[in-house]
Image (cartoon, rainbow, N blue to C red; front, side):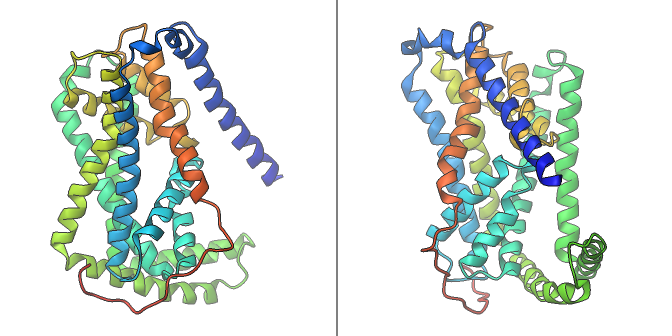
Length: 349
């Protein structure tokens, strides 16, 4: 029964996403209407929009590589690229993007990385990402709130601010669990006992003892990270560049339509607001909220005759194209080989 409901749920979400894309294409002033004037779009700016999306993917993989190399010196950029693509694919098809990191830990274990080390690296990277995204969002609120206030509905503002506070809460929780060994152990034992009561686990005590070994590696990696403050600063700067690459897609689309009135800063802030809004929507790809948020915030910049087409192009580049690019990396192959294991090395990469 659970499997049947899950299939129905996944099919429903897929249909919602496809229906919205079709609507943006076939409705009045949609993408099909634009097709007759496709020559008016500036190809260079459209190409730059794709470059921004690809830049975000590649920087994500590079950051995985750098964080993992802190404790696993033989981890390669090639393996990090596959881990990063896998994470993007499963994040795109699961609610709240929850499937990405577990699949990355699994793939990295196949590559010979201890689950404690990979979990620490991914959570450290995620913590930096969330911190930079929250700071980016706070800057957007301070810099561009007067531009959007009164021109965007209260409901959308409520979701945007809820997303901002959710990001801040995630950061606080991650810091607490990342550096409090006692709290993390208690949480692990509680989860194991809960799974046993649900008949999903046969021996909670033994499983907890096994995972406590991985927790030791996890907390050791976190302590090690604090000794590399310059590395942490560089990671923050790269993450800001990564976010800017992703947020710049909408500005490139705006320029592709030949518009020049809005500044890049205003467009980046608008995209930050959309990101805050969709972060509280528990649907794969935030279906519906992403398109609606973009339409509402960016209708301030696009004309009524172009905003639907712009929404469809943005959604394709930042979601559907990402799925198409990352899907081939997400499947296990018989030729997959583990990286040669090694002891932790505390030297800076």
